[in-house]
Figure 1: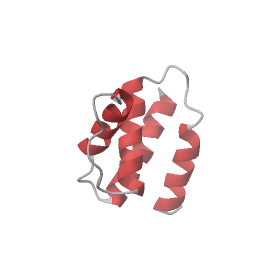
Figure 2: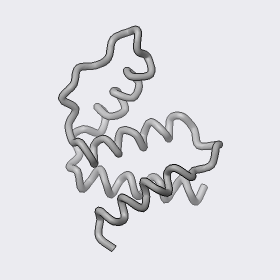
Figure 3: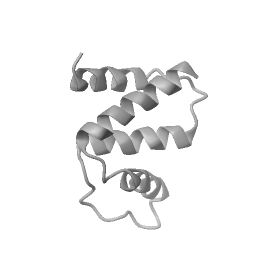
Figure 4: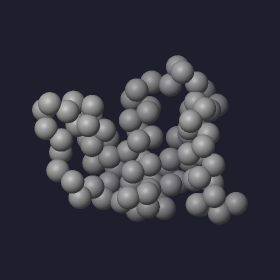
Length: 85
């Protein structure tokens, strides 16, 4: 399969991860997904009154230097690891 197809399948698989998946793992997935689909963040960090948005933005910012292909590959790998755990 191609990278895009594998990524799309991993995105579907991510919806069925076990409830025991930690918030930290979910944030890693979020950051990698945004990196793979959007690229670099062009928005400013959400304000103090949006703590959920800030944490998500931080997760994205940590991986924003990855190319879209690297983001897809890392996302696929992380979903695979979480499914196997």
